[in-house]
Image 1 (cartoon, rainbow, N blue to C red):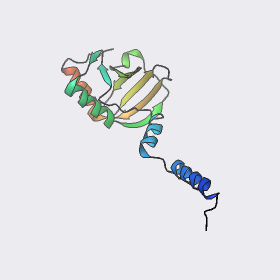
Image 2: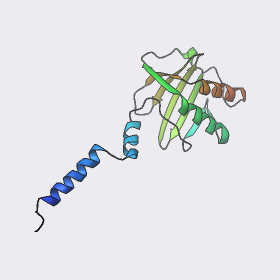
Image 3: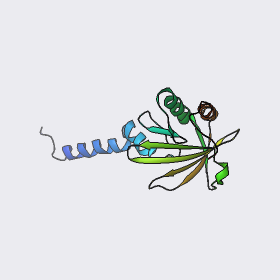
Image 4: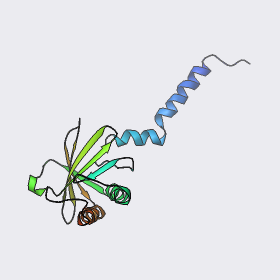
Length: 146
């Protein structure tokens, strides 16, 4: 008995439909990373803390602490200039992301300004990041008071 002609197109449509229903993990991760507020850093990014480039172990430690920060919520208020404690610049490819950080006891207020994107203000809980920034500033790699 020969196979019906409609079987092959239906098989192709079902295969495409199953791909759309359950796409591969790397596609899902790429798509959802486009909408995250607190972006994750990688070792390929160039990181500047208060105009000083972090290299080697300092960069790895900072990236680990940055990625460990937990996003709390997005806010609408931008701080006055005297409230800004640290400036972080991340260069990823041709894009430059500028972050202004205000470190307090319980949280860190992050203000992101990226070229071609809207400004964001949000709050994270990151005791490791606060300790890392303070440690780097004590080593003389970062200057406070911006």
